[in-house]
Length: 229
Image 1 (cartoon, rainbow, N blue to C red):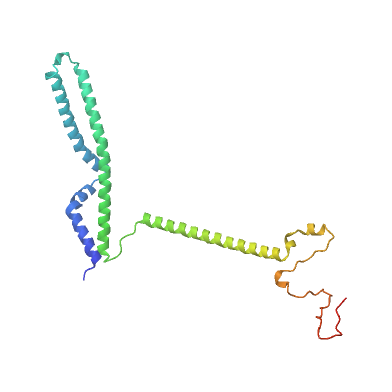
Image 2: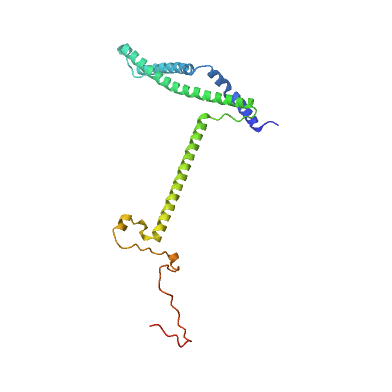
């Protein structure tokens, strides 16, 4: 059974050959400047003929409608103005025709290039189409930027976690010993001994330096047990 993608490609090739194939192949036989010159040649001839007709209508109106005497006209000035007007019109249409011809030649080359790619696809029997190099490079650059942003984000998160851990450890040390953050110079400036404040978790533990004996509770049933004075 034929490949579905291959059938679509063959259909596109047939439509191209029917619509634009012959004209594009004929235009491809010329260089770009030759193709533009050939297109502009017909445009210039048509503009010159049209300009002469317009000038003839203009001067006919002046002579027969406005009643201008031909012998009173300066022929040199009239001819010079007519030629200048005709040259301006031809130059304008030549400029427009050059832009249009360049665009048409560029589109023809793109269609022929796509046609060749589809033919290559059929010859390779289902090989995927050629990837555009510019689009591939742009995609790789975008992926590289995205990876770089992700790495910077991860480094920032690790740095914040390290700073938070160091801050928590410093807060824990300062909670156990309020004088932990005091410099040695400040501690040596006084003769008072440093008193270590016991933390809450050691509040229930007995003191090692305590010399006070434990107090024995009084036995009310024993008459000889007298209260302490």
